Image 1 (spheres, rainbow, N blue to C red):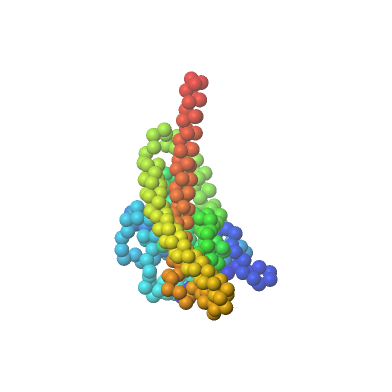
Image 2: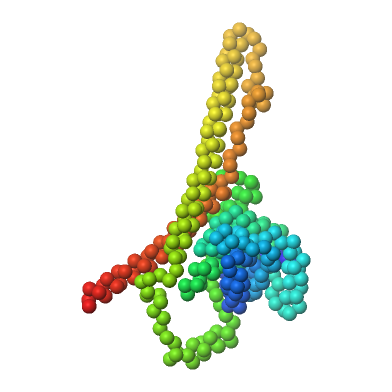
Length: 339
């Protein structure tokens, strides 16, 4: 159903991509699909080719969706386990018949105000990068239709880092920085030659008719984006504190078990010391022979780390909004002082 794509160097070894280049047509299809389905978060497939360290995306199509999701429910709510393998197979065949790239290089997902560090997104992306039918260079493009309404396209490309992939393959529960789980790739939008020429001609022909839009300089925000970000940030911190309670319970239980093990070990060592002094047979020191319970298994770190990464992303977005408004205030203050 999906073809294998990978970038190779002169020695024939697989190399990681350095940037993502997406055609304007694919961008418009992603934007239209996500905007038309608001408030439902939706997903789709990306088609293209991996060439010379750059992942070129030339086409995209949407996944069939049979359930609605709440817009504030998180970025992963629109992802579904498709028995749509048949659907994707038919799409590949039809695209191949019309000479459109039918090489799957990843997927895209709409998100709500930057909510993307979730288990659903990470697990789905891992299934792409670990698939034998796809390259490890598969990516996910996250598009935020809410923030894009303000006139600035919010679209980012991500992939799972090599370190996280290695830890997950080895089923390791070691610590990894939240910023090292999903790594962002530079995203560049390009158009084919005649489309770029048409856009330039369109711009030149309407140069004198373009009105200056002063909405960006308005001191009154037309939406409550900052308030929504603060609500999401507060909710994420509450979830993080709840997650920390699991670690506290694990630490207390682990400490109790360790104390029991040390007490049992000290008794055995003392018994063996007496046995040596009395020329008696020493007892075995093996926890497997005891009735002690083994140490509890540590809870998975990834949930906690993803929450930290999401909190950091919310903080950065709030800082961007606040920084913009502060600059407006300073500008108007200086203008008023000169009048």
